[in-house]
Image: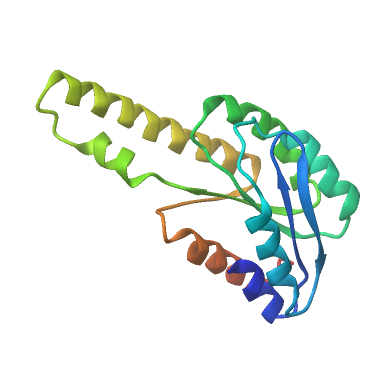
Length: 175
């Protein structure tokens, strides 16, 4: 959705998919045929349970694309083990680019975090969920402190929130 919006206003759009390794890359280009290329890249990917190699992916991106750009990193802020490598890698991107870290919040976890416990098991679930929500909010704050924008939205709202951020960046002339 965001690639389509950006292409319609004349910007170049591309995509880089990675996990343990860079898995696919669509070179940034303009035009109406570019968003479908990105969509095909996404459909062709198979998920894997590998830790993301942020330094390698960011180095590959910087080697291929030198012009200042607005980058959106769609990732999950749910694993603490993932956060530290991401935090160490973000400054490399921010030295040249604007960065948005986009993630989807889990409404079930948030509901558990505020639920009234009726049993000891409910109390444990609530405490675990509340701890997770607190950790996630702190993770977002740490990323913001580095200078990146964080969009942590409910399911179904992420694309619109990222598109709104893009339009705001464009209106401010930051690209």
